[in-house]
Amino acid sequence: MVNGHTYISASNASRWTRCTASAELTKNIESFDTDYSTEGTEAHGIAAKMLSYMLLEAENPLPSIEKEEAKQLMARYAIEYGDWIKEILPNKSEIFIEKRVSFTDTVAGTCDCAIISQNEIIIIDYKYGQGLLVPAVDNLQLVFYALGFRKSYGRKDKYKLYIYQPRTQDDEPYSLWELEDHELDLYEELFNNAISEIEQGKFIFRTGKHCQFCPAKPRCPEWNEELQVIEKSKKDFPSPELLPEDVAEAVHLRGEEVIKWIQSVMKYNLAKACNGSRFTNLKLVEGRSFRKWDDMQEGDIVSQVNMYNLEPYKKTLVPFSHVEKHLGKKKFEESFGHLVVKPKGKPKLVSRSAKGEEISLSGGYEFNDLFLDGEEYE
Ligand code: SF4
Image 1 (cartoon, helix red, strand yellow):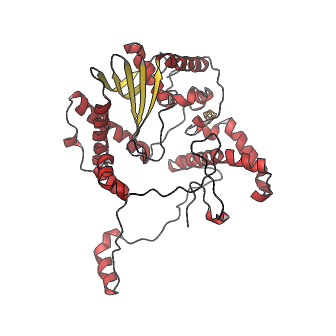
Image 2 (cartoon, helix red, strand yellow):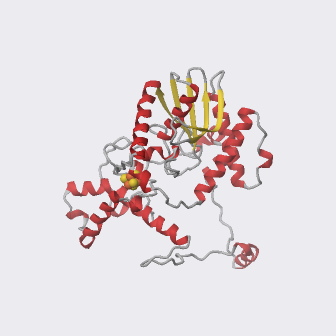
């Protein structure tokens, strides 16, 4: 919190430590709850209760969890989370769940789980989302909590920072970043410099990966420059084969970020409109809809389809993710691991600095057979 506004926090530390201007620009931006954020909040609540029961002998939350399938699933993931923490738990350690910590007077944050032993501090952040894999490495939210616990419980030799994300398709549901005490000092300096810049009103824009979820992106001058470039060139978008190779490469490298930014502006406008705002040149309409059977009349549908000698139901295999959700990752791997295959991914052209080993293909791909991420096969 700075000057009475909660616009910098531990959870967005990766952004404001790198772009101090975002602290000012995100001030007073309304945030809208989405299905994903509501689901995440519920899953966190259930996980915290389950950990308190499994690790701190609090009351068992299971009897009070409603008979809703989504909540039971959250509870099942929370039990796996608790079992995993038991596996990594050092001897003679103290466990903290949902503890508010800080190392500065300005910002504080609530850590999902921390474990303090004689030689190390373990920080765990629980992420329930399944779309975007969140790595532990370079995650400043985790560093913030480690600094908070170090301030209260003293320096240790080692800091183990974990993201536990049970619904990802990766082999392990967690990722780890290990730091030593002197490395934590460097991050403390980074935090303190950023906080001091913000407190002195020195707001500096710095773009980067941290812009991805910045709520100020639609009003950010750095990104508006990108928009002006698009505006100027839109009358004359040259076809790809006419672009010099270096320009085509530059478009490719920046394109992904610009597309994400345009989508964030469009989503922001949609959220505003759905919450009652009216625009001068935009209007809210009902989107495309498709005909479907009336679920309430399934009996009538089946009997009438039968009258025409047609089979009313079609049999398909249940998706493996559905079975995995019910059994949990470990049990699923034991019983079904050998029955699951992972086909090769579609070729994708990314920056040389991005993750992934370079592959070499010898042709046979037609322009119209290739798809970018997010595009759908017809
Ligand atoms: S979009 Fe990026 S550069 Fe702009 S304010 Fe947000 S973090 Fe800073």
